Amino acid sequence: MNNKWLYNIRHVAPGEPVKSEIVGRPDRALEERTSYLKERLEAAEAGRALFDTDVTIAPDVLAGQPVYWNYSTQRYERAIAAVEADDSTQTLIVQPSSDCVGILYAKKSANLGDVVLYGIVKLPEITNAITGAPVAGRYYLSATDPGKLVKQRPAVTVPVCLLQGVKDNCADDPWIVVMPQIRDFLEDHIHYRFELETVAAGIVEEDVDGHCTITSPQPTIAGWLPANHAIFNGKAPAGAVFGYNISEHLALSRVWPPLPIQAVAMLWDKGQELVGATEIPLGATGAAICDTFGIWWMSDCVADLPWVRDLSSASSASSDSSSSSAGAECPREERMRVIVVYLRMLLGNDRSVVTSLKPAPGSPITVVNCEGLAATTGDLELDLNLELAVIPPNVSGAKVLKRVENHYNLRAGLVTEGIVSGSPPIVLTSVSEEPAASRALTNAEKTALGFDPDDAITAYQGLVKITFDDTLVEREISPQIIRLSDVVERLYVDIPYLGFPAGQDSHIRIRLNVPSSGLGTGLTMRVRTQLFGRITGTLPDLALSHRVLSRPSSPALMPLIDISPTPVFTTGIPVVQDTAVEIMSATFSVDEGDTVLVTIRRPLILGNPDAYLGEVGLLRISGIIATT
Figure 1 (cartoon, rainbow, N blue to C red):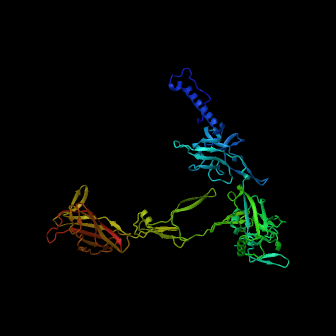
Figure 2: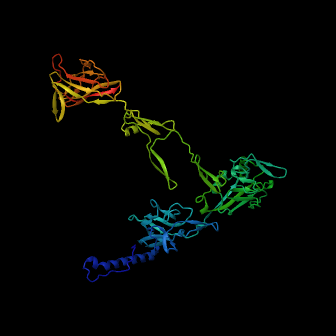
Figure 3: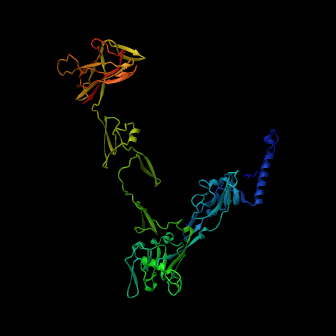
């Protein structure tokens, strides 16, 4: 259907250029009006839908949404099923927004549209009113979101439409049967009828005056208990002597109390002389009282007991029930029955109001009455115990609750869960009110931080102290070259190095100056070299010797010869051409301020050259100081 009626037809004006879009403009306008009238006539002829066209709508109404007529603003607005309590009459009043009259069929502008009031229409925009994918079937007016439809029948029940779905294999648009029901849903109700257990939940004792009491009450039995029993939480009305244990009569407990409470009657068949059931007078002066909290018996006279006198236990009640239904004996065998019949308004049943409230097991919430005592019905207060128990062990994770916003929103964020040391000089210690102020990282955490999964890494938590341990671990001493003997300076592919030529005895003499302070005592040194071979083969054995010139505190004689703790510096290392290797010497002792002389030699072997035919290149040499 065309959604717009053109009130004005723009004819060709003098001076306008002769173009097809201008000359044909009035023809197109007349065509649209003709199509509009044709579709209106077809709809009226078929009687498929009733429309209220070109009406004022609220700007927030979308096509496909249910609407009601707001007589205050004189426009259609989004409908919502709602009621309000009238304090003066203590009743519920249906709100005008519940009187859904139709669905917005088309929106022509922000404040103008067509409303389908009744009938069948094709309406793809129904998705604006339905959350999720549309499903065929009846839809009701939402009681929570304006302009929405729900599939589940709510307590405030306003049927709006029937979604038929797609009816043509060649089309994708769903068909909707619009049929809003304007009625007072507060009158909807359900009738209930329950037969009470005619048994005393305990031991019945009779005195000489014909009065009865129940001793040794058993609150786990469905039957009658003393009205002052703790299970009733002090809710018994004045004068009540017995109370019915509704909590153990599960079917009845789910739908009690009647709504309104006055819509209840009790029938009593004493099982005597085939009289049948008679209505029990209710109220403070009657035999029983029915209120929000339960069913109460007002008389303790033997003749008025709501149970058979010789049947005072659940087991005897069962046997009575089975024997009374045994079969076709004449005259008919009778048994006592107490029946309660009542109605509940649909709006006030357990789908729309709270009938009982109690905390879940282990919940920090407590439910109390106005006196501060634990309760499940009546006027209740909720209390939250924030002294929550901490369940060990501690939970890993850096996200914690940081603050409360808008009184109920909890905002979470990241904090530092633990600190780990990435190098030995950084020393961490921690303290905490918890017994454990540190934990071992998992393999996944170690991998994420770049540690070897096989290393033992500790994360420190709580109050963490970070100190720098400046105790010497390792320090590199740069060399001073003081002599080259047949060792040549080379530049190979822009890499400078010192070369030990093949076939001749050659050596290098360097000096390593140990710093005079800041290292401590118990020092050792190793010589670290980086070598490479100019050809593929096995590197020759290089000899290393050293001489330590101690720092003189007074005139002292210097040592005159080297010592060779590692006569053979390298031992047959196979290399590929231009492959570098790193070699460490053996350890020897030094002290602060010492001068160390080191010689590395490529010697002849009994006057003959070694087997490696290429030159050995020295890329780097240094002394490594450490502590023992």
